[in-house]
Amino acid sequence: MGTPLPGRPPYRSECRVSAAGGSVSRWGEEQRQAARRGVWRRFLAALGLSPAARRADAHAAACNAGAEGERRTAALLQPLEAVGWKVLHDRAIPGARSANADHVLVSPGARVFLVDSKLWSSRYLVHAAGGTLWHGEAGHKPANRSRDLRSVLYETDLIARALGVPVQPVIAVHNAPVAGSGFTVREVPVVPTDRLVEVLRVNDGPPARREAAALARRATVVLPSY
Figure 1 (cartoon, rainbow, N blue to C red):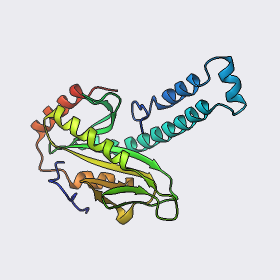
Figure 2: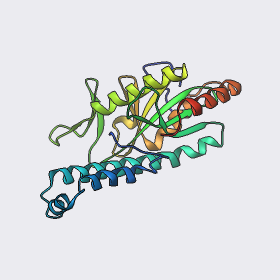
Figure 3: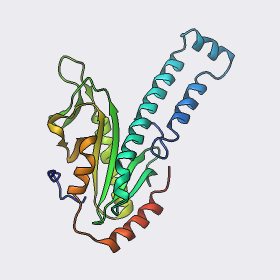
């Protein structure tokens, strides 16, 4: 049995992703094509002399990785629907210009979770130090993931305001090892995906079917498909 999330009562990359990763490849390809629009741009890109094309290619690759992470998370979450969870993928967030919610869940206990999917390199450890989220350790050029943390906190706040209930964020990490099989930084649990469903279920409350159904309907309307 898992451990309840510490830090608060267990109320539970800038890529456009749809239907758990369905449109991200198209978005990335649009960026690649835009960087190659016109004969001269295509010529420079073909020669490897276009910085814009290189940036667009890198962005598309990052988006594709993000989409794959979301698809994997969606597959992991699917069994929860059979036991009364409402699972919404890739939802627009009221008040956010470009951010979208990867996965919003309403539990049978009427608690709301925001799951943010990350597919990071398996070569480096995900850990926290001094309130900062890191991917990699000293001596290996660790990546500061503070931006990812700020993003999920921002999305959580907007969703909570839109629904009028507390929202518990969770960062789910694919591939990369996670320190301690999961930890919490700035009240955001960071867990390996093989523990995601366990953590969600442990942090549900007593059954509240009527409230959960009403909240699920509200979430579907207030957080439309992106």
